Image 1: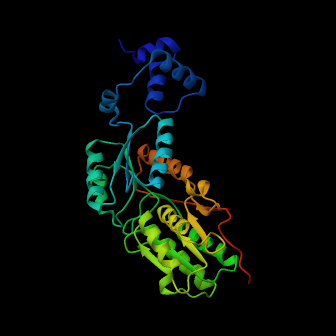
Image 2: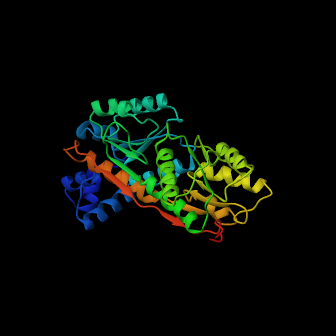
Image 3: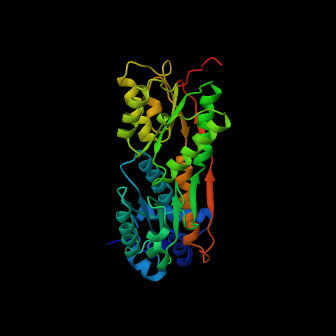
Length: 336
């Protein structure tokens, strides 16, 4: 026979009100929390979420809609989100939008029908129209990694333009004047647009030209990074350095350099983005823009849970986190 809340009461000597408050996410005294958690483990207590949801109108479940769960960036964020929610005793439903706006909208409707308490979105869309079902159901939404163009919503992100500016400036500080960029198409992808603008601003502030052949913009993929680097290296007047604006592009570009007769940094200097795995296995070690992945996931959960437990869901806030550059040896210092 399964344990009940009354069994926890008998084991701990605490009131039903205190135990119920803890089980529903409320704050109790630290010593009471220890007693209740110990009793839960010993009794192997499993709360009846369906019954509790009928009483509290909450399922203690959060949905996450990610643009591509096959992306290492998305996967890393999902891990940190899961860890943060588990600490707060929330379950997690993950939906993959497969880089398709239609699927993204379907995912929102699915999560609304599952009556999740809140939704974290790593969006593809630039418009907030796909979030209408969540808004109508009064389900709070927090955006992660990128905002939407037409509505101010709670969001946790980095300053992509500033991060790119600092990355390209590091190349310029090492006396590189011929710097190319490989990035996502700015018409469809927010981070690609912002990072490209950061590249342009750094080059313009240093009064450096940007030849058309040095700008490679298309999709967020390993294949595009590979193809683009091949073309850059084959130019009659190739760049001495390349800014790689996302992880997949960085991976493809490194593959292209490794297949060529050139070497990094002797023949080509590289600055990558997202210190996930690549910089730890590549020799020479790649300079990387590092996003605070764990903090991003945790802040998104913190913000969402505040909204779930708040009566005032109207006000929105944007949390912009700082990046850093991890040092490597993939940048040659040229003579001034």
